[in-house]
Image 1: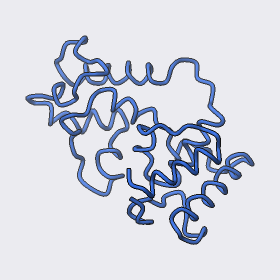
Image 2: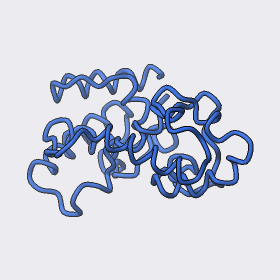
Image 3: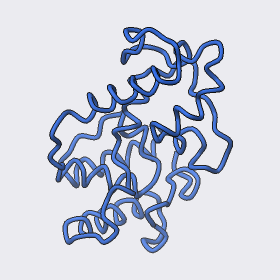
Image 4: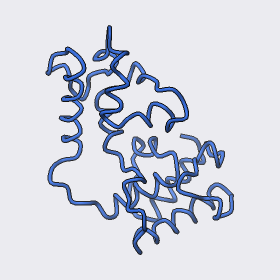
Length: 180
């Protein structure tokens, strides 16, 4: 993370009285993702079970359907490259689609689907699967979400030195605002 990103994280943490872990901050690339993360942290939705456990069991089921690997080999610390070894590259598109990870590995559909890096673990995929997505929010903001969005836009515009009207849900911190 560059200095611009660190300053933005500090401002967000101070404004909303939350801690933004480095792992979560590394996944946030747009103003909409930041807004979704903050709304999720401030007003978490009740879940009947642990979201990460649900994601892990689903991921394991999908991998076992597409690959002939030992069930015990699919664990959070396992490297995805090892699970996809030999004929694995041919099944990655189906696995990515089933897990709804295609946007993460194709730059939101702007490039060809790429395989996960050799050091990517199953736990990394689970974090991607459970990270709040701006598309998961209702299309119409409620009063709470609108208030958070106004505060996020103000902080981002001040930190990036751009007009507040230039901040939209899909505004990318690096590509659109030049933040490092």
